Every structure is written in structure tokens, then in C-alpha cells.
Length: 255
Image (cartoon, rainbow, N blue to C red; front, top):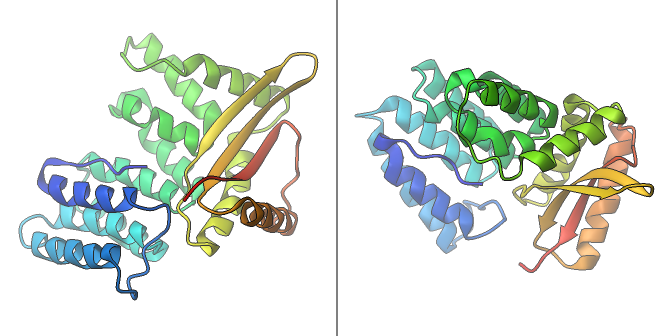
């Protein structure tokens, strides 16, 4: 998921997005690779940005740290940027980079603060909120946006509303979804893989109705199976109560 650029840091943020798109894996800055070299060059540019735009530099630092899976660095970067004021993109990129680290509960909390139509970022963050598992909240925001006559891409709105209906009927809340997804995030970080979230609705009336959050992973089918077994163990240890209506799964895709 791409971070959103702002004018003063546009070039650097775009560089970060380009490096991120090259692989689903986090960068190991200790290795000598093209991506680690790009990481160091971007860091040098960010260091130079501090003299003219500290807020933007800290935001870019947070986005850069997400490339290596450094959650503490992401928090420090965005925390410092937000302390210097709301640039708009630093709040949006905070939501996105929480998601890029598999911190779904944190991403939901951030989305709740900025995703509402009154904030002005509704249309840009609606899909992000759904990926974070905030389905009920996203639908509530969408209903308010409709009342406010805010234009937005409603191409997937019906599907999200149906997801909400299925999950509400089963008594599954956004918070429960986030806790479940957080466990998947832990497994992904262990394997140094950035989350790519694919929410999926299945409607077979009279047979099955459910929502699945699939995570494509660049590994073999056998390795994906092993990751799902790892996830199952983590779910038990985290006290996640499984429900057939909502599932989380890793799916093997070509690297």
C-alpha cells in the first residue's frame, strides 16, 4: 500500500513507494542489495530535508522505517511529525504505515480519528479503513458522507455494506477483527513480509455467508500452509475465538 505524498516531501515519498513496490519483503539494511542501497540514499535525502522542513522530514522518516519493518522507528517518525502540526498527509500516512507493519488495531484507532467525512480525508482513506478491518466504522462514515453529499468512489460500497451485515449478524465487531488481524501481522513480521490485505465476501445463501481476510504471501504453497499452521497456534495463544463467519488466511502467490 502506497504512502500518500505531500508537496515538500513528494519526491522522497515517491522514492519510498517505488522501493516498497519492488518486493513484498521488508528490507534488511545490513545486507548489500539494491534495495538496501536505495534505503540509505533516501535516508541521506531525508537528513538533508530536516533543515528546511522538519515536519515533512519526520513524516518521511516514519515511512522509510516502515520499509525495514521498524515499528519503533515508524512511531517515532510520525509522532515527531504530528507533534509539529497536522500536514494532512502525516495523519493519513500514519494510518497507512500502521497497516504496512501489520498493526491493525493501531491502524483502526488512527482511522477512527481521521477517516470521518468531516475531516476531509474520507474518500482517500475509505479503502484503507476496510483493509484495517474497520468495516462497521467505514460503512458509518460512508453513510454520513452520503448525507453530506460528498462525492467518492462507491464501486465497492455494496460489497462492504454486505460484509457489515454478515459480520453484524454474527456479532463480530471491528475490534474483534483487528485483534485477529494483529495476530496475522505478528506472523507476517516474523517472516519479514509486509501485509497485502484482500478482504473477500462470500455469499451462498442457504449454504454459507462469510468474510475472509486473505494475505497473499510470496512463498510456496507448502510454506503458506506452514504459515497458516503457525497462525493457528498464535490464535490459540492470543485467545482468539474462531468463528466460521470470519476467517484470516495466508495464500501463496508467485514471488
